[in-house]
Length: 329
Image (tube, rainbow, N blue to C red; front, side, top):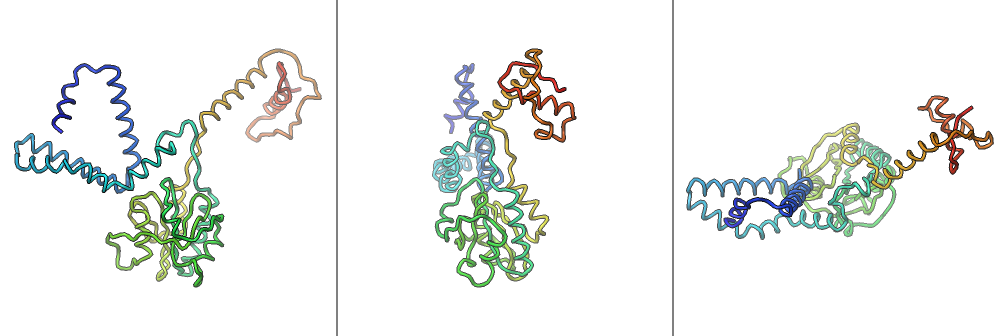
């Protein structure tokens, strides 16, 4: 550690290569912090920062014994970090392998859960809550949970309120356990989840512990319907929030699951090319368009355009491949 501080304080005049090196490291650290923000790893990183502050302050204040103990404990630091952050490290490596770690400027964003799926889940939860039928739904997000999927019954069916209701109603073979949702599909049912060791309220039992355990160390969202009171609860990042109405549940799921679709670089280039072709079509020459090539107004009508804009658009679209200036008459 002292050698590290010596190298930091004796860098001298930085070269271009050193600046690039520091910029890459800073970017990687920034992306890692974004990845673990709000999770269990974020709290562990906070503890590490406090530990380093104490280590530095003990050396600065001349507290030899405390500094000696903290300095020797740093030897076990890398091993302890690997043990504590094993799930997060595995998820980070998976992200590197799928290029999900990098910004989505080339491939564009992806909408994992559709609006129809959210409505089906909310409708099913409302019906289960009204009849006080116990249920546990785990919605997978960016961090995959293959171990949970493997210990359940594979379904791979579209998410519908009827399907979710039929799984949890009665004493069927799939009602005991969790339903796992990935994207717009129910991938498995009767899944066994890890139980949390944290303290919960007295009225929360095994189903709530399983819901919190599924979100501890992952970014999954768990929805619980209490069998005793019919109360709807949502677990996220190892914490649970209870007594949600259907409207609040809908808003929460939309904010957590619905992602904005960003245009990819290829689509932006294609859009720019189309716009340039349109400008060339409207401004290249002064020849008139034969009337037989004009497209009818009703086929391309756009309610946001004025009537004269629609007629110019129709004439321009009908002359694709020609070098002309189109006027609507």
